Length: 295
Image (cartoon, helix red, strand yellow):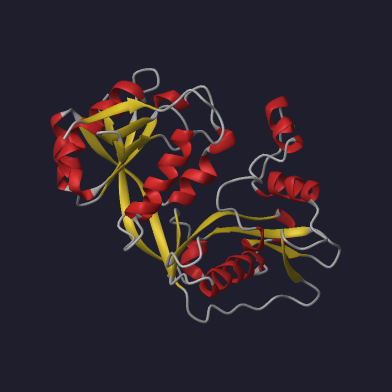
């Protein structure tokens, strides 16, 4: 074997490296979801057209040119998470080294390590990292009769509907995540270019909207599912501030879950520990702890 970690390409958008990583993440979870925190859809949602100048810091683990692992950040430089083929568990210490040397910001880094993974944890301790009280969780829902009730006058539609208004959606997602500042030039350019609507495996019928009687896109749930894969991924979910506490977010998510079930999915996953998800049927299956260097 000739295993090494190399830098991700400088090429933005849906590059060869981008597609190869997506294929790797699909492959390792194909027969059984062994890395629910590293599903292909997390990669697709986070990156692609959204890549930045820091993308070349991401690490690709290869064995004779075949991708077997990934060292990436979540929000940007200064944090890290890993995904590795189980046949290469022995290589976990090297993933830590790569993250420390390439993904740190101003000399600091937070690394998400699965609770109970002794290979990662013991290697982290040896390198001087310590666990914090901060957690990063993955939750799952079983797809089976996931019912919901909409208030009178509200209806479900998807991006595939002929009446879908993309500009109204961009305005809704901006407000739905409580953004109060004006968009900068990069964000405005993203709206203009319809960034993300050409993402791999994007199914417009799985992008669910709850429409208010006045036409507002009151709530939204994005679902990602490859037909026959057995699982789905939830991202993003929002409800406009004036429509919260009405069950609209629940309706959007469970409608998306149901549609994925019709494509063969048995479970849906979300990277969250919010009570909202637990209240509608999700339950935690994986907890990761953020590890840092002691000050």
